[in-house]
Image (tube, rainbow, N blue to C red; front, top):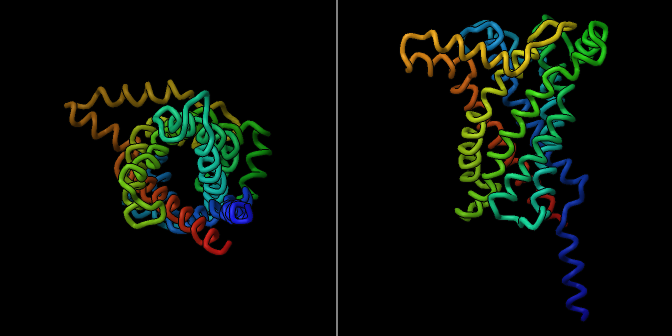
Length: 285
């Protein structure tokens, strides 16, 4: 009995508290935000001004809005990975961990929660990128003075659709890591998670495009709907000379390419940093 009791106590000490999981997510978010901020801004300006991502103007002042990006990425990762981690341990309507339906439900719940909570922060970040010498707080005050709460909830539906679709696909990486016996904090996990992230980004790209258009809309005015944005995109695409030109145009407008690669690598880095942070804490318990 004494051995069993000791074993139970040891098992409990190997579990992270919600606060510790939040901290691991926060660290992964900070790492991603700092390393990817220049690419984030360049991609946004490329979409807004309909020009190549490699246009020099996109890379000038690469850390403008970095504080907003840092806040958003830190919050996103401090929520996304702990929530996904926590929800992955639960069963839903009889579906146990390891099943495809379970992974789908975890992705659905995780994406929904993160989108609803983080949309105001994301809206401020995009507003900051669109103006010279704008800070997180000055942008927040400007948005409030022009439209009250409306600018902060703009793009929520598009972000919700994007995050749910992305999360459902990205949660599949856990099953892939299990199938290949790959430790979550390994170098191999980085490229496997990035590969799954690439697929998730491509699938959710249309909703991400709609979200960016809505965020770029003038503060105080009603933004176009997701349906109208995607309809306009397809209308423009159909006027290309060949099917190949049409596909290339859609990929260019939705940033399926360099933009997808950026998101994929960013999520891969975050997943590995989160796993290694957890391992570091567990090893000290």
